[in-house]
Length: 328
Image (cartoon, rainbow, N blue to C red):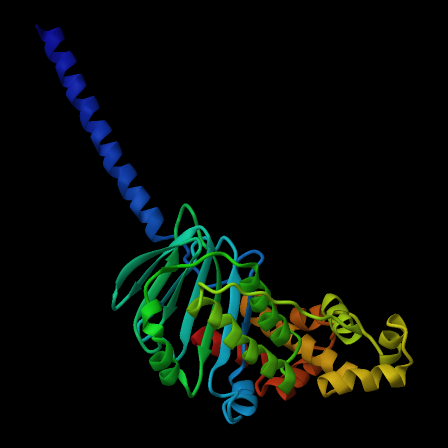
């Protein structure tokens, strides 16, 4: 009798311990999930450009027609695990998010939605929104922020609000081609022609989503200046003279300089400096490198010289540029 009672007590004790373990296990899981480091950027293989306000103010906002609709931010986040953004008051821009793979969740005043592969959504300005990648199947997304003087007209004419819900569309390689055109143009330096070209491409990019039933094609030309620019971008930390670049592309220095300036509006070295500073802008945002390390990455061993050069181009020091972005 005593033996049976002892066995019963042991069973009850074991069951209680198992239940407690389940409770502790569930509490641990919840705690772990809540402590995940959700991030807004910094993903392996990402591409991101945030056009500095000083550039928008000086080269876009006061330029008739160009200020109608223009890019403020552009990026690509592949397999963006733990990606998360919440803006309680929204932002000044429309945000177009195009999901290529995986999925994520989006919340706006209109409800909570799931955005899956081959879908896009356009978030309206100045409205609360929150979005995050799925834990198990994080999305890969292309995105563009765009603003301008004609946003109301754009909405009225083409009913942009229709796309404030996840919308399916057939895949087209041309969408990625034109996105790459915009990104590459801005990445090549904030010249008037680069900014103008990127923002004219924006109209084309948006049209893919507003008129997704149309079949689109796109081709791009290449020339020696484009090859030279790509060579500069691939050797961002290298020192070049005009003579060195001209020799590589089989030109005399004078002819190469004239050809380059005719297309870009500046000399090859001025252009190369802009590319370097543009790359530094991305490193300041995406990496936790010291200012000295960023300067060295783009070919400037003297951090004070790099900071002066950066401030002259962007209007603020590297430290201030990084701080302003993190506060945004």
